[in-house]
Image 1 (tube, helix red, strand yellow):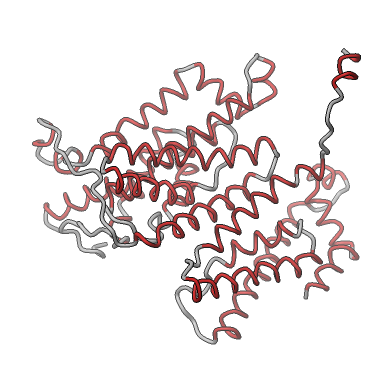
Image 2 (tube, rainbow over the protein chains, first blue to last red):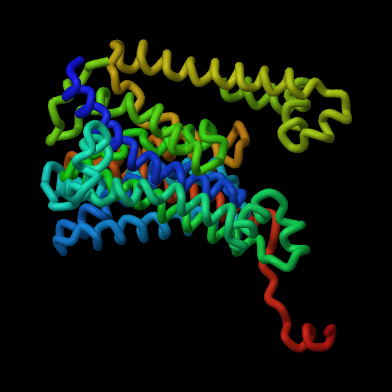
Amino acid sequence: MSPELIIALLAAAVQAGTPILFATLGEILSEKGGVMNLGVEGVMALAAFAAFIVCHVTGSAWLGLLAGGLCGVLLCAVHSVVCQVFLGNQVVSGLALTLFGTGLSNFLGTPFVGQNTGGFRALAVPGLADLPFLGPVLFRQDAMVYLCYCAPVAVWFFLNRTSLGLGLRAAGEMPAAAAAAGLRPQRLRALGVLAGGFLCGLGGAYLSLAHTHLWTTGLSGGRGWVAVALVIFAFWRPGRAVLARCSSAGSWPSSCGSRPRAPTCPRRCC
Amino acid sequence: MGAAYAVFLSRTRLGFELTACGEGERVARYAAMPYAMLVALVLGVGGGVAGMAGCIEASATLGRLQPTIMVGYGYTAITVAWLARLKPWPIAFTAYLLAALRVGVEVMQLELQIPAAFAPILEGAILLCVLAAQFFLGYSVRLRDPARAGAES
């Protein structure tokens, strides 16, 4: 393989890994709070649609991003209510969320299949983009990829260096002890689920706003399940999620052919 | 098949042990039931029955092999099982209901141009409602009498 091809492949891998990393971080937050959320796939699909439609109507990619995140919060609020208020089975509730989210996004998105949207464009970081090898791979991406470089650090800082993060972990590990320490475990858990939903929503929004720039049915394409698997692979740690994402994302750009602006990367080069 | 399933679960010793294991692991262990063996058995039997469903679908209903042979039947099955509250007899009824939903949605797509993605939306919503409503099987809502609550405190 020529160096250009390798660079293009690695850059495509960074892009393909971004939504998965967001969703993985969201799932880590949720599971650290003691609620397993198997609805990531549905949340991502619906958030992708919400981001697409808002960006399509208003023309602003950032508003679309916000809409995707809020959509994730909304859907995970349902999960939180079913699991925490009504004490439903977390696994089944998550599966129901997946069914509901993918179904609703396909249902609402049918009239928009194939339509383009603006979304995020690649912008080079001044200085860093001219680095010999890392520049084109890491620093000639769109704004959401740069956001995704900061996200694991932010999640790690929140979980390990703030009192709220400590409370969240305590509520996940042992709610009774957290309650004895004067915390409110149910509220903290709900916070974890909702914050996780926001991150999953951002991951979904990336798919329609920056990855494809158009709407198709089944846009999430199983990435939510990959995220759920990567949480276990990353051992519930944000730092390792980056490693897990690096190792798995390499296999994605070669196998998913839904990228209209694909660079010189052939579809099956592995 | 369904009848055999029901008889197995309610009338045989193995079926009783399985139910007991599902209800409470520690109690089942205390009663000297081989918990791990039973779980492995259940997973095997469950996989076998699900495989049989796929086999029937491919060999009898369709008669050929396609890449998209199962369009979300597995998820529908989860809804069916929970709607029947995990009991064998009502499953026949709820399976029929959800099959009617799927067929009805296909007719709706043909006649009214409503996308077939309507079915999973309904299935997901039904499943969420069933989960939430099961809460009320164990707990009943009782309005607190303000006068009496004041007297107690």
